[in-house]
Amino acid sequence: MRVATYNIEWFTDLFDKNDRLLLDKEWSRRYNVTRRDQAQAIAEVIRNVDPDLLLIVEAPNTGHSNDTVRALEGFATHFGLRQSAAAMGFVNETHQELAVMYDPTVVSVTHDPVGEVAEGNVTPFAPRFDSRFMYDVDVDGKPEPHVFSKPPLELLVEDRVSGGVFRLIGVHTKSKGQHGANSHQEAVQMVVEARRKQLAQCIWIRRRVEGHLDAGDPLIVLGDFNDGPAVNGYETLFGRSGVEIVMGEDNIPTRKLVEPHAAIMLDPHMAWAISTARFYSKEYDRYLNALLDYVMLSQGLASTTDPKWRIWHPFDDPSCFDDPVMQHALLTASDHFPVSVDLIF
Image (cartoon, rainbow, N blue to C red; front, side, top):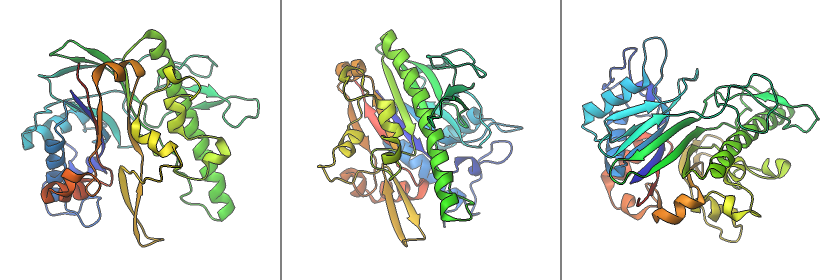
């Protein structure tokens, strides 16, 4: 089975208010890319990656007349993709939903959120992701309420062929916050506050991970963390990145999630530059690369499924680099690239 995550930049803007595809020459939200070209590139990427289950980060919107599942299933039908079914969890208000596309002949999925709704009470367990999590992240002795702008997607997934079952948590955490600052000091304060929120979200996710590990659940945590080992200097202020929090402590290896790309970046002696996203910087007038997207496996799942990870990077993955059509599609479709893992159940 192939499971993948893919952040598709402003996917929602390729649909009208009734979820009809806008396959025209008007500009998409991608710089110098038409809506038709972006849609065709997305389909080309999905067709080549060929996942049995694909987490879409920044999926089309649900709200008013829009419906994420309808939009994704319509997209798959139009382009003849085998990932013809879609599912999502809690709706959010950002026009960037978390959803999955999957092949219903290979897997079955059920939205299965865990935890009780918490509205201000401190608990050692992880409350449901659409409620409040009380945690003292600024270390002032007073726990603050934290909420997800994009509640993680929790699925129960079954391989229809082997009968293998695993839990899946799809995430899109944020750590940005300097936009609109009027001074350097204000910008730093905004970034630090956003960083606190992002770390609180990752602590919340880690507590849910701990619950699944305690229950012996095979588990995949995947998505866009907007963070990672050595992503920015604020890690020294807080001690570690959100990705490291979710993966677990080094001193308890059996409780640590497995993600080889993150592990490489955690080793300062490797000096490799692995990335899953490519952004243009006006400040430096060049493209910058970052490792933001991950597929993490529980130790039990990793030890029994012979996992093989892959970042579908247009320049760093040899097969993508040698395929001009795929390379162009990856660069046209989004500012992120898919990350996949192959599992044998």
